View 1 (cartoon, one colour):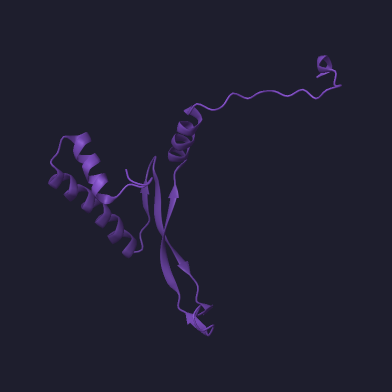
View 2 (cartoon, rainbow, N blue to C red; view 1 turned 45 degrees about the vertical axis):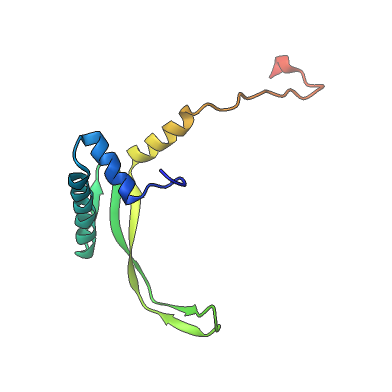
Length: 119
């Protein structure tokens, strides 16, 4: 990965490496998955991938905006935006991995003049 993000080409390479498929076959698989998600969202469907998360559309209401160059008020039309909600399992996996990273040992501090036996 470069700069902390994975590109589509790197994803294709990873699928190819893990599955022992050619890069061309892996690219077809990745493209098909993305196209299937996009097509389902376009039809207004929700995509739920158990253990990973769900994709759906959210509707943004029309609003008054401002042109940053001129300061003029403009009408912003309503629109649909894709939204991803991670699943519980994905959140747990991400948080578990960060917990497994070695952390600096905590050094307890005891205030002076405090009876530690009663704590």
